[in-house]
Length: 422
Ligand code: GUN
Ligand code: FE
Image (cartoon, rainbow, N blue to C red):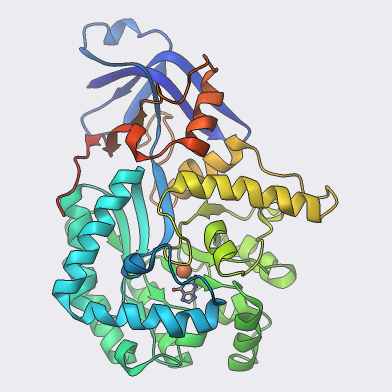
């Protein structure tokens, strides 16, 4: 048993933080939380305590949508909308990951940077390349950080340098599944890039794999108006963009993440609710690529699950704390835009999306309730809380003004995670 003492904050529900000033959390040998306490129970009195003093102890961040091979393009090239942006900047960069040495250099930095910003669970797009995708998975495993890694399928409207055939995708996908057997911290996820990149044959093959291997699925949905219009042309039989995934078995038949959903409404919203498909909200990306403002309050009202994603390099920064800021700010613009009809999100709601809601895709992750895997950050915000703020205000201030310098310890599944070597 390990016992940690600190100022504990987490969100069992979106409504409010559970706050335990100078409280204790007990973590068992499997890395699972036994309980949080204001006072240690008698049964634990004899255990040694690791005391983090006045620091904050919070669940670690979960990034449910990020493109690892867009690492080099972070913070640049945001002067185009989605479709020309993909062709001009993104596809040429991803093509480079055929070269395993380039992939290793970049993927090592990528995983190290996730560690820095306090993201201990990541769902990542890799590329079409088998070797590089297996390597990315290995780097997460070596680091001791939880992840789902997606080898990407794309066989139409893609450059020759970044296309795979259906047979190649299936062969390489099976190789990745095989590569990851025997442990469950890092897992594969089926990753058709999006409908415009995948022929009906490709989507059919993905649906079969999902069923045969019972694997989760991730893709993009209703991000941008031109994209939606294009999908209508490509899949005229579908009642909406989401239905184009549903009819191939890729929309909730197994656990499913759909990034963006800026324009999801009506039938598509109904299908997401019915099949419990996750919206992965990527507000930094939606700003940078001028895509739109996703109706997160509506999704929450309807009972559609929502998580957060950095979407590097549509998004410019890996920190999910920054994504929380943008989530709050965009929800306020949406509030203003709707004449107050859509109440803006609170800090605890946005924090919940980044921790317990996103974490639920991995199992019992993202909270400190009993039985949850202990994924945690210790934050020394001494240089930020000059004025004796209460604990929720300290966390708010860290979210807006802090960075990796204040994160002094990171845990994933109960184990302390050291800085990965680049
Ligand atoms: N849609 C298809 N591919 C991508 C991508 O790489 N980034 C974003 N933001 N949207 C996409
Ligand atoms: Fe994306």
